[in-house]
View 1 (tube, rainbow, N blue to C red):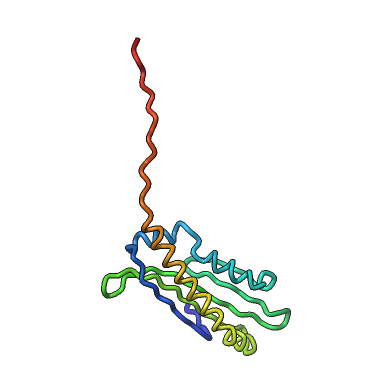
View 2 (view 1 turned 45 degrees about the vertical axis):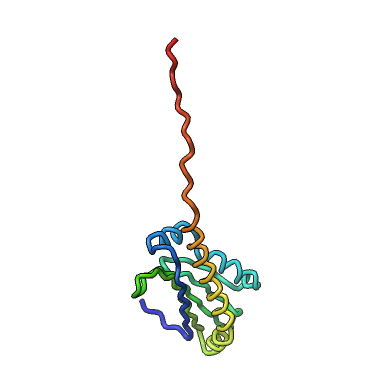
Length: 149
C-alpha cells in the first residue's frame, strides 16, 4: 500500500561503515527509540501512540476528541551510493486526517524536520562509532589439566 503524505523529507548521511556492518548495527538496536523519547519529552505521552511495523515507525498524534490526528512515518535505510560509499537515510512523511489536522502538520513540520535531521546525524555517528570500536579479544579460557601422580 502506497501512503500519501502532506509533507515529506529525507535526510542522508554518509557513513564510514560498510553497508552490511551498518545493517547489523541497526538490527541490534532500536534505531528510533531515542527519537521517541525526545518526542515524548515534549509532552505527547497522553496524545501519542508509537508503533513499529516492518521498516516503518509511526507516530499517531491525537489532537483531541473531535479534532482529528496527524500521522508521521519514519523509515531508516542503508544503501550504497553511485561512488560506492555507504549512506544512511532517514525519511519522514506526515499527513493529517482532515483539513484542520493537515494545517497542524504543516505548522509542525519545521520541528519534525529538525528532530529528524538531528536523529539522522546521531544514528550515523552511532553506526560509525560501533564500526570503529576494536573487536575484543576472546577471554582466555580455563582448561582443567590432570596431573598424573
